Image (cartoon, rainbow, N blue to C red; front, side, top):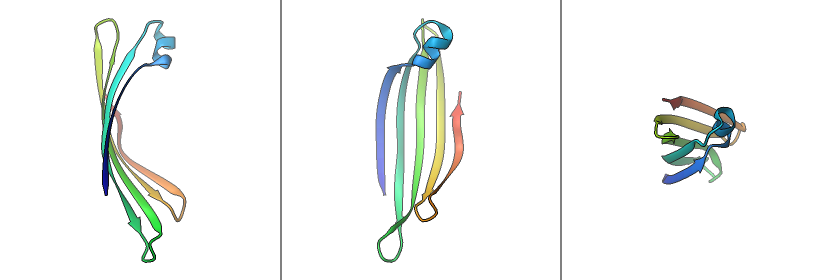
Length: 89
């Protein structure tokens, strides 16, 4: 089991092109992960729980956004399953 946190701030190029003025995104992402092993030590599944808090701002107004999701990676089948709220404003 492990945890992670990282922060980022950038000018959102897509929003800039759509609106014609700079839009800044500031985000903090946090989460934890767990790797499940078979009896011989081979990784068979990885579970990642992740949340984020982000704010888009431009010329004064700010729009907050949050998300939370759980992703499960099945290393045997080669699949990914995602559940949760991807984006909530």
